[in-house]
Amino acid sequence: MAASDSSVMFFMITAASLIAIGLYGFISGPEVLRRVLALNIISAGVFMLMVVLAYRGTVPGAANGLVDPVLHALVLTGLVVAVSATAFALALLARLSQASSAPTVPHKRTLQKAQQEVEH
Image 1 (tube, rainbow, N blue to C red):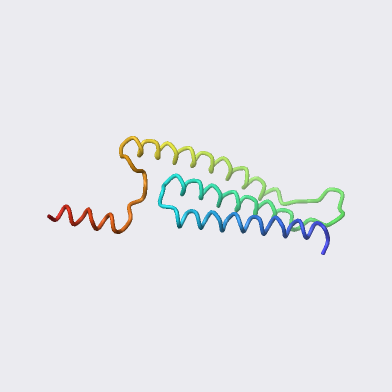
Image 2 (image 1 turned 90 degrees about the vertical axis):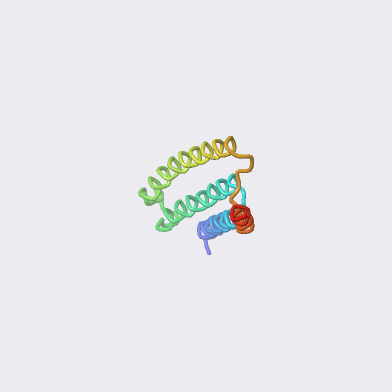
């Protein structure tokens, strides 16, 4: 295994672990802010994976390692979209926190309790 193969594998494992950590944070966290941050971690892992995949066709030892420029353009576009979506989500979260005291996703028990109070 060449040095470039081991570094590509390292970055692929790092990207996969970022995606896994982000998915865990998104699924387990009831707070909206935690979910927004988890989505950012997932997107960072996806961007890293796309950059690593752009280098998969390079020839080791070549002077100008040719890479796929389409994936790099997609990553740049994705970064801009991710920053914009994060800013929008944080603005919505700020509005939600102004309107209510707890910006969390309601649990099933909380919804059932609210329905029982409405019925009585």
